[in-house]
Every structure is written in structure tokens, then in C-alpha cells.
Length: 148
Image 1 (cartoon, rainbow, N blue to C red):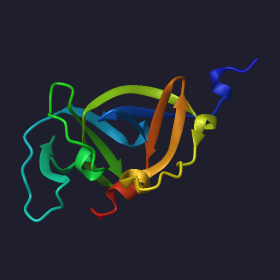
Image 2 (tube, rainbow, N blue to C red):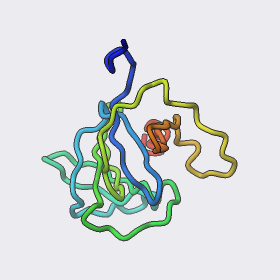
Image 3 (cartoon, helix red, strand yellow):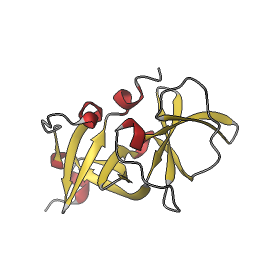
């Protein structure tokens, strides 16, 4: 009899952008914050909303809706900033909602499907089918590559 510990899995945070659910590994998430005042920075790409001072650390903020060309929704009580760390760089992502923390069995993760013309396809590392949900796994290195 197999237990859940026998199955290799990855723990992810699931968040919403428009009508799609995305996932990033919990190991790269530092925290989830409510929206706060963002100071604009001149001459940055449209999707870089500015910076925040989070516990004494100046953190750049990226609106993933703009980054992926997803129709922007109005910020509301569900809007969150997910703070992630990648290669000693801390960045915040504005998302429509942070829904869940889940263990995804690695066996349910498939390579990125061939989606012709999808703007976000270069940012996807894979897709996971979990129960009736389809989760898009992000490749954070590619999402952030213009900031480095």
C-alpha cells in the first residue's frame, strides 16, 4: 500500500490571474501581502509597477497581468502581492488572488503544451492536472529575466 509520502511531490502556492490558475513552488515564496502603496519608478517596463518598502527591504513589484498580457481586473480585497526570492533577488508579483497551497505529485506534471501564439508560453515550465483543476507552473527565471 502506497502512502502519500511514497509519491514525489512539489508543494506550490496557487494563484489566480483572470480565469486561469498558476502555481509557483512554496520554496521560492517569502510571503503573501495585501496590496499596499507602490512607489512608481521612471523608465521601467509597463508591467513593473514600482517598488515597496517591505520590512526595510526595497522590493520591485511586477503586475503579472501586464507581464502576461492578461486583461487587467480591478484590484479588490482578493488582490495580493506574492513576494518571491530568486537568486538572492526579492520581487513581488501582483495577482488577482492567492488561492491555495497544495502538494502536486510530480507524476501529474506535464511539459508545457504547444500553444501557438500564446504570449505567456515562454514563461511556463509545465502544466499539472490535479483533480479537475489545470494548474500552469511558472518558470520564474524567465518571468524575471528582464530585471537581471
